[in-house]
Length: 336
Ligand code: TYM
View 1 (cartoon, rainbow, N blue to C red):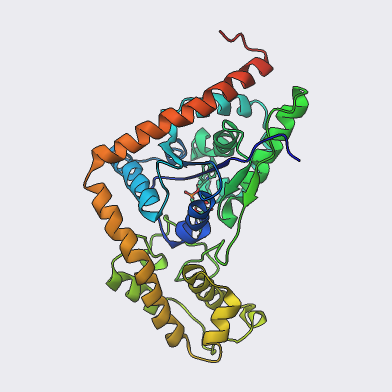
View 2: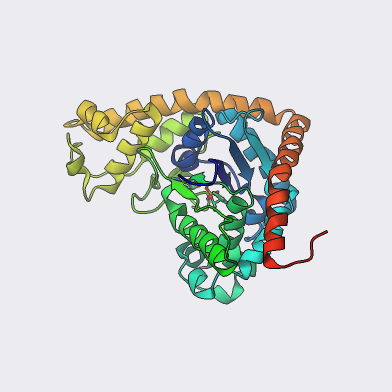
């Protein structure tokens, strides 16, 4: 039995629109987990500025992502929704963690290597210590469960290492070991143009991703144009091996339909891709159109969104402040 009571924390970056990867890899689980857990869902604006963001666009994106959380089914009364920069404890604890984490640990982070690209010297220092801030996000609340997509697994492992080193260094049992919750048939949604690349906001081709605000025509077009191979669909999971585009479309269908990849193959196996694609386009429109409508409604009332964020920040602070204060005491700071 853990001495820590269960608490869920997760976040998304406000850099452009959310896409199907965010929705299937993380959001579906966020919504589900609210039913029986205390959940804290953050719009991680401080993470966003590790890469340059135009201030007006960032401001808008924070509201847009908040609207998307609510439209997807996160209930701002039951769960806490807030933007990270409004709760200073994240930055405070991140500094302590900058002094706990080791350079060698950060040097192994694949996301830094991907995002910094070839010219590492030109990357911001923030991008390098990004995983320490992420650990602080989670541990400022002593969160125990973190629903994310597959790509965040390495960051979660680092958060666990930081929690453990803090506890060992200061001879306390203060921070829990947060568990990544990476579940469902689409924990890694791939680009529609290249089944070996993750679907992402930063891909220059909009055809590579389905945005949750895309209209019916765009969704249908993107699925119709999605890359496939020449063979018919297999009837068993084993037949998807080495066929990343087929595996991706089957996984997306299963996740959107609330079923399994095997059930999808039982239905479409032996047929051409066009059958699956047509059904997938209909399913995606049926699931995403109501969300897009709701986002549009919420965006028409920015004051309401700001009020959700202000209320969430206050509730988040009430949890984080005493935890971070205690962490400062443990480190040896004079705390008044
Ligand atoms: P971000 O903003 O890149 O993505 C938000 C969530 O969406 C998931 N995701 C995907 N899942 C499946 N397939 C994909 N193609 C795909 N693309 C994105 C991500 O795994 C994530 O769950 N570092 C985080 C944000 C963060 C955070 C945190 C998360 C900051 N602090 C604390 C959890 C706890 C990120 O950049 O996510």
